[in-house]
Image (tube, rainbow, N blue to C red; front, side, top):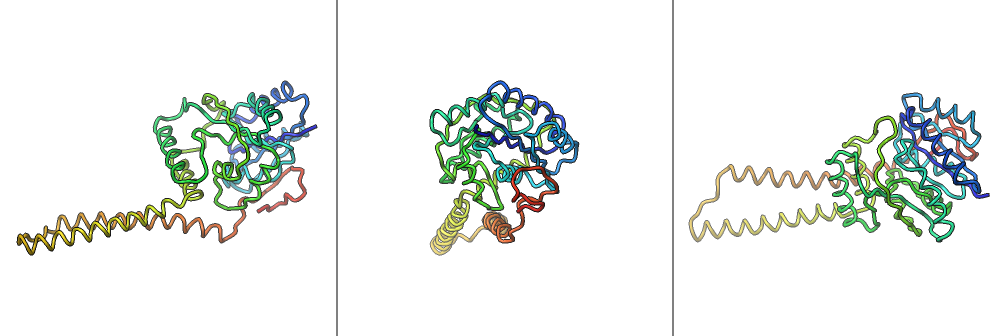
Length: 320
């Protein structure tokens, strides 16, 4: 029988975990009589009773495995750890808050088996329940990234997807420290079909994604999959050099022909502040790329495991 690996990233999800496990088991029993399952829960340095609940599930259900980090390393690290530990013929990534509906899993599985796709992803067609300001900036981000990047980022795409082992191995082979999985999924290619659904609010608990965290994550995506900001900084510098050259000629002509003296210090101060701001903005763009290079060069581990119960022997206590 084929096996599906269900990878669930968890950070302070003690309220949602029991509900999620009950739901995914209902789906497995109802829809997957012909398929084996394994559940891989990643405890991303939770401060509540998340790990205790996972351990209790592992004692009661032999299909449950887990990896617990030494601290919070972020969702990207958690997903990578789960992908590396997965042994199934097919792999899916899900959130414990049930915003990724398990009821879609059978349909995703049938599409891969019957239609020859390597991956079936999900995307939200609405952002009902989200703050309007977050939805606005999310739409702006996807428009920008798709204009700047060579790989397509689907608006509303979730990490929730079912993929073949071949695609999973391709993603795991990319060991970069600064990870942006939505871009990596697109970068590796493979035939992907998208399923659309209405946004679903969390079943329990609170979101861990503040506006600031989402903003930093968006910057991560831009710097990871586009060098357009560097080109933009160079273009702005060239444009201002051209403007300043034209203005110098204009001032010289006005002074020589019309005897018009140059403007006073207020206009000069404004120009200095504007040009200085442009310079600092351009340096900031360069600094973002330089910082990513710095983190890659240091070769620090993407995550560190404190304890685990997984099947693969190569998953050691301090996995890089």
